[in-house]
Length: 99
Image (cartoon, rainbow, N blue to C red; front, side, top):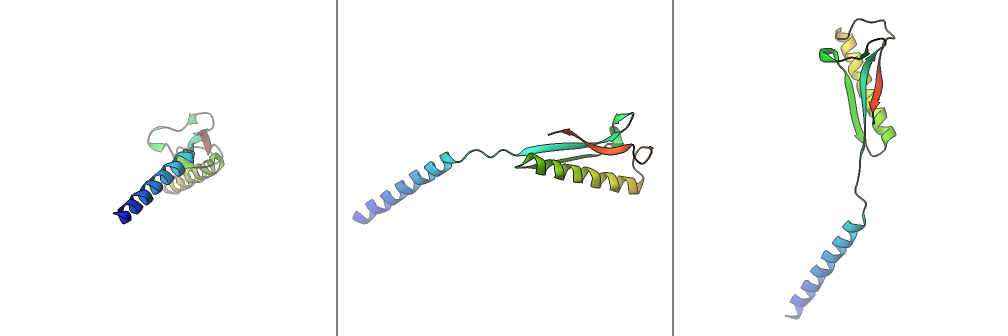
């Protein structure tokens, strides 16, 4: 009987400790960033030729760096395959659309 009270007390203490620890932590919120392919004089490229990059991270700066790299990587892949709109080389670039 005495052994059972000790286990019950230990379980209750552990449960209260878990509740106290979980209540004291702040909720995690991730920042996101969004890049899209942009063509000078025409705006954002849409349709089948649309290229975009999205990433999320704890810090907005990190998320935007990842999204920019993803968009540029997809743009280079599409350019090598010939799947980009006709334009001068410097008319197409990835720009941040939201964060």
